[in-house]
Structures are given as C-alpha cells and as structure tokens.
Amino acid sequence: MAQPQEPTFRQSVDLMFNRAVGLMDLSPGLEEKIRVCNSTYTVRFGVRLRGAIHTFTGYRSVHSEHMEPVKGGIRYATSVNQDEVEALAALMTYKCALVEAPFGGSKGGLCIDPREYQEHELELITRRFAYELIKRDLINPSQNVPAPDMGSGEREMAWIADQYARMHTTDINARACVTGKPLNAGGIAGRVEATGRGVQYALREFFRHKEDVAAANLEGKLDGKRVVVQGLGNVGYHAAHFLSAEDGAKVTGIIERDGGLWNDDGLDVEEVFQWIRANGGVTGCPAGRFVPEGAKLLEAECDILIPAAMEGVINLTNAANIKAPLIIEAANGPVTAGADEVLRQKGCVIIPDMYANAGGVTVSYFEWVKNLSHIRFGRMQRRQEEGRHQILIDELERLSSDKELGWTLSPGFKEKYLRGADELELVRSGLDDTMRIAYQSMREVWHSRQDVTDLRVAAYLVAIGKVAASYRAKGI
Ligand code: NAD
View 1: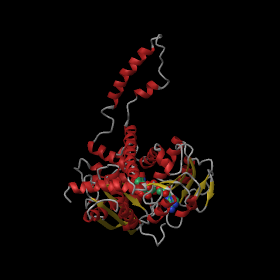
View 2: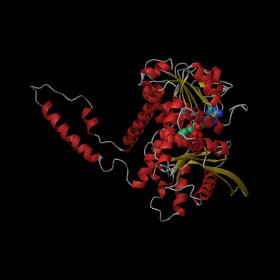
View 3: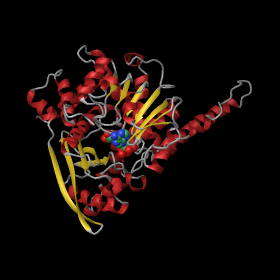
View 4: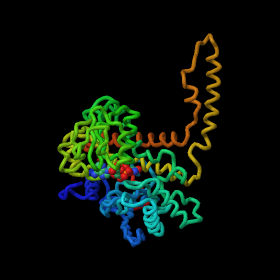
C-alpha cells in the first residue's frame, strides 16, 4: 500500500496528468475540464442476509462524458473508496481514448469482501446494487456500461445484465448494458482472457522495437526472459500463462496475498493457479520455494516485472530497490507518482497501465458492438471465406498433382488455410491490432519529442490530445 506521505491514488493520477499537460498547449479551462471527475454517486443499501439487514456501500463515478456510453469496471473489495473509483474512472477516460474505444471513462466499486459471502448472497447483493445504479441510468447500454474488475467476474456481470433486462423488458439492446458476461448470456469469446492477452500483445509489440528494448537495457526477444508476476487473478494468471506457454518466458516469481513463490527454472503457472484455486493462496505449493513476505519478490532480480494485483504496491518504500529494468503495469496504478520518478531516474522503462491493461476494455468494446448488432462475429463471412480458400486449394492441388512440376503442399497447410476465422480468432486479431497501433502511437511521441522521456507521459499526451479534440468538436 502507498505510504501516508505519498499522494492518494487519485492525486497520483492527477500528478501524472499534470506532468503531461505541462507539455501541451491546452487552454487552462479545457485542461481543468478534462482533469476533473464529472460526478460520483454513492449508494448505501440494505440487503436481508442471515436473518438481519446488512448495509453495503457502493460507488459509480463518471469521469468524462466526451463520448457516451461511459465505460469502466465494477470492483468488489473492502478497500473501495471514492478516491479510488475516481482515480480509476479517470484512467478509463485516458485508456479508452488511447486505444480508440469510443467511450468516456467511468468506474464503480462495492465495499465488500466477496470471499465472505455465499453465491446466493452475492447474487442478492449484486442485484440490489445493480438496481440502485440502473434506476439512475448509471447502468444503461447507451449511457454507462460496466464490466468486471478486481473481485468481480462473468457471474456478477450476468446477474447485472439480467437485472437490467427485468427492469427494461422492452429494451432490445438490454444485453449491451454490461460487458464481460458469460458467452451464453451475451458475452463474447475471449473476454475473460482479454486483459492478460493484451499484456502479452503489449510485450510482443515492445520487443518488436529494438530501440525500445535497448532503452530498458534488455536485448533479444521475450523467449527466456525472467518474469515476476504479482497477483495470479484474472489478469495476472492469463498474462503469466500466455507468456510462458506461447512466448517462452520464464515465470520465476509469483506473488499472492499470503506470500510468494520462487523458482529459478520457472514456475509451472498452471500448477500454481490450480493450487490457489484449491487452497486459497500459494502457501504449501510445491511448484517453488515459498517466500512468506511475498512483496519482497517485487524487488527480486528479473527482466520483466508484472504487477497485476492492485494499486500503490510500488511506492517510495521499495522503488529504489526494484531491479527489474522493465515494468508492465497490468494492474491499474501499481506504481505511485513518487515511485514513478525514482524508477525513471534509475532508467527503468514502465509500460503504463493506461495502455498495458487496455485489452479488457478493447474486447468489452467488441462485446458491446456484438450485443448491439445481435450477431456473432464471423457468422456471415466465415463459410464464404472458406469457400474462396477452397478454390485456391483446389488449384494448388491440381498443380501439385503434376509430377513434372514436382510440387507438394506442406503438411497441415491445407487444413490451416481452409479454416475461416471464428469469433475467438477475430477478437484476438482485433485486440492484437489495437495493442500494436496504440503502442506505436505512444512510441512515436516518446521518440520524436525531446521533452518526452517516458512512455507514460507519451500515453497521456496521445490520450489527452484525443479527449481535447473531442471536447473542441463539441464546442466546449
Ligand atoms: P482479480 O480479483 O481477478 O485478481 C487479483 C489477484 O491479486 C488475486 O489473485 C488476489 O488474491 C491478488 N492480490 C490481491 N491483493 C494482493 C496483494 N496485496 N499482493 C499480492 N496479490 C494480491 O482481479 P483482476 O481482475 O485480475 O484485476 C487485477 C488488476 O487489474 C486491478 O488493478 C484491476 O483494476 C486491473 N484490471 C483488470 C481488468 C479486468 O478485465 N479484469 C481490466 C483492466 C485492469
């Protein structure tokens, strides 16, 4: 957690914003308009559980409505507070602008430890919270569309979608009121993995640029890189899994709430994940050496550090000890503004949260579009695409049967080429494209301007520029 002498999460986001706008030529009025959070709604509601009424507190904050609907997850954690949801809502505004998802920024939170409740209790609480937000249009397909965040997932999103549909029985677009739903309840293939997948695509793109890799004092490719991950939840697990299973990275450290695990040869991510599911933590897991003070592993020797749990974990108390030359912020706000400065001075390259974890909102955007269009991606063109490929295959087979030409098709080519893209492939392709283009827009600013020395400022410059253009177009 951030130390008391450090700014709060929201102040930290504002400080980073200010560092960027200092390099821009915005009118002071517009600068202020973009920075401030438009509104935060606090709701306190009672739910009868276990024979007594329990009161819960929740928030929905709207940072910027330069585009609507506004978008942002709903977090379930006891640490949720107004400052935090406002910081997260602001980050959503910038994130959506950076990856060109046509949304304003919002975020919600419910002060609750979901592990303390049974499933039917969580459903009652979620439905009541959703009811409070829906009746004020703080959940609405055209105004405000939540998604999962820390402590919430597909199950909660399905309850929210159903609650909305019950309250808007004739709204044909009801399913678009929330994203991150299960596939059978209007979700999209690849949403659960999307944020972690986006972290993988972000790192792949980073490693495509030799100059950027050299700036982090690294060389080569992702293959063989030593990775430390904090938080093996939705984002951390998928990032660690894909990086180790598909890119040859070695996950040497995993940090969870109850401690950390270390293995110089690389941990078996799947084994650790299953252990956590069964036992609630990493304690006792035979995959690696147990380190009781898990957070110490943030300071361990590695090539890439992936904080994927929560905000403020890299702060003034440990920033100077961080050895990773490259940090990718899979969580929102894991590096405080103070720590950011210390790390920059050390030459550490930070791939900022606004970009690094944008995979979630990107695929949420695809899901929202799917819900509004009422058709699965690929349904119209897949077989047509296969038919066209078949024509080419037939021709190639005809030529390869000509003994004089001496041609043969490579093994597996026909099957691979013939198969038209299904929804999952299209989603991954759209996500990959988004992550590549957004990275390139940041690095162009990073390398072309003398006064821009890091990717975070570059990300803010690109994002704020887009939000400002949108406000100007509206005549504000
Ligand atoms: P999650 O609840 O699925 O997982 C969080 C994990 O972190 C859990 O395994 C938890 O045990 C662990 N954890 C919590 N506190 C910890 C601590 N102090 N030390 C070590 N581990 C700790 O949450 P998530 O959805 O993976 O979200 C993680 C982060 O990613 C959050 O900052 C969230 O805002 C951000 N994020 C999530 C999404 C998404 O699609 N889920 C999208 C963008 C950003």
